[in-house]
Length: 533
Figure: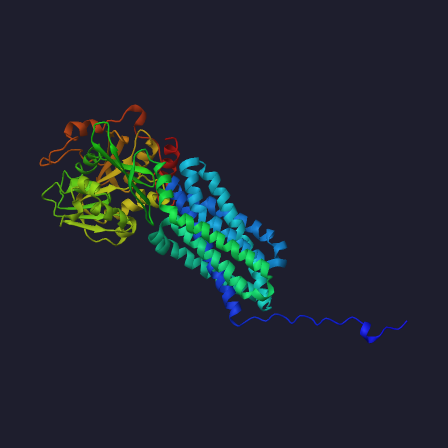
């Protein structure tokens, strides 16, 4: 039986290949650039938050980076089946990454403040963020090849060039722009919003002609939902942060700010004596209580000023309380205060509770404030000083441990006059005896002669200091005394200082290592001893 021409099926013309505009490839690489910048910001935010909340920056960085890199490998493998629907899959990954990454700081802060499960939460969040970042590259590579076929090596080169430059911008933008402008919590939310828009709008615009309308609507709806969540949290961020932060402190928080260097918190309450109790915390560690800070600062400053004192250098002590004690001597002609964080010295200049405590010391015309890293500042310093007061926080991070190293004390020698006296706060001989004696040993190693002493500060407990002068470690120790013309003091006198040099049997010198840049022994001792308190 014959078949007529009319009965034959009409051949279907093949769909013409989709052509892309000249700017499509550029837009896609721009999306790679933006997503890479966002991914690195999430990583930096997680490591910085951990350092602020629980210290041990090396451990925090190691855990976050290793977990994220491992998860990125898993994410790359998991993305293989998704390459057949690369457009929708990539947009979905970016929506999820924007939500998890943008909310990551809030999730971890809440986990620390309320749930007390910070480390498990950090591992989970780091893994999920890494998993989603890892899924980006295979999907983006598929999309890049869809726009224009090229050899694998060239495509990889283009992709990673945009990725690495984006990482550079994200790495620099985090401390220089995001933290100062938004803070950690809001900064992560802003980056999440940028991530969502870049990952969804750009890709759907480029591939709009080959994406079904229902898919486009679903993905755009998901993006809007993600932006709504991030925006709502942004509006509520201050209240959430205040409420969560208050869980960490016994007394009401009256000031709080996160700087590129540290988390600064001031609390106020009424002490058992009936006096106002103002307390300063840096990264959660108590720096002083106004009820008894005079004990600490008198013990720190006045033994060092019992000799020549026309020029004085204070390193650390941005709250200006040590400076207050120095300025009580009329014959002090000039004081240089070197503190890393300009936010801390600004607070000491403008915040009324601190102004009342430091007697507006930073407004004294004899004072010069330098906001710089003390180690690097010493390398270029040329002026010499009669007395040096070193009031750094305890060496519980790598950045602080270098300020308790043999190399640091060697640098310090270049700014000392032959008869200069140096005093270093050394932590607690009771709670952290190895840390304390390691600091003393380190100063000895740098060819100073030392006198170790300790006093009781109720809000701290037993606290130790090291008085040092230039000379060999086997030379006569510097005498621990007050100047004959010392101002009236509330706590310290010569009898107290004489008793301060006597350490009980269980807290006398120990066989510990000196701390150096390459072997920060004091960091190891500090972490191990303070973790029990």
